[in-house]
Image (cartoon, rainbow, N blue to C red; front, side, top):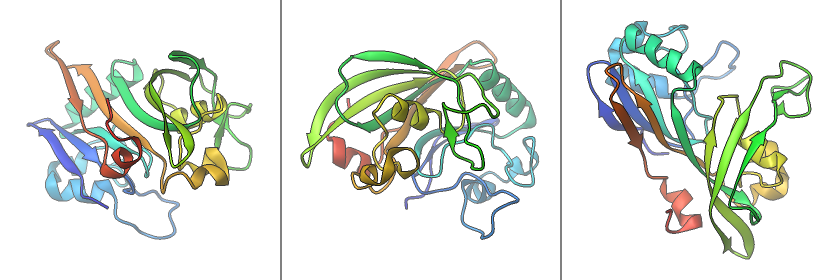
Amino acid sequence: MNNPEIIHSDQSLAVINKPAGLLVHSSSYQKTKEPTLVDWLLKKFPEIKKVGDETEYRPGIVHRLDKETSGVMLVPLTQEKFFYLKKLFQEKGVKKTYLAIVRGWLKEPKGIIEKSIGIKSGTTKRTVYSSKMVKEAVTEYELVRNFENNGEKLALVKVYPKTGRTHQIRVHMAYIGHPVIGDTLYGGKENSKLAPRQMLHCFSLEFSKESGQKVRYEAEPPEDFKAIVGVIL
């Protein structure tokens, strides 16, 4: 596993390229301790120790990526910046662009999935077929190209989640019959043979600063992602 990369940093914000395989933060119900992004951040930016809502477990964390998902994350270094970014995310003021490699060829060049997501009873798994803790979820996607890899029909897609539900992209792409390859939770055992992990990458985040200036931060996908798809864009 590679170390996180600092894309940008100033007095109030750090922008990080999180590697796949790194947990963002620990939680109270974890039985064993493993390295987290927060551990690394505390060494690089010790000022985050008192930044956030739950500083004991996730100082400096205003949004998350799944452990096996790579890509851009925003890390506020002050409480003022934390509140600003938290409000932006809540009000859908951050434009998120992901890259995903999914199973099967897409027939349509673009589409939108409007399907609420809840928790599957008795599990932590998310599903569109639930009546428990259901929340609105909207995902737009755009086909970059269909291709073959080792005889398997795959597709590279840009994905634009308009809401920020847990596992949203993975759940929605599986719902339309195109699970993210390597995703065993929503793609099944056969899907897991196509990649060693879920091939999902947060390519860019775009938002307006307090001054009104628009900024965009992006990160190239990791080598294991590029090895499957070749040239990205």
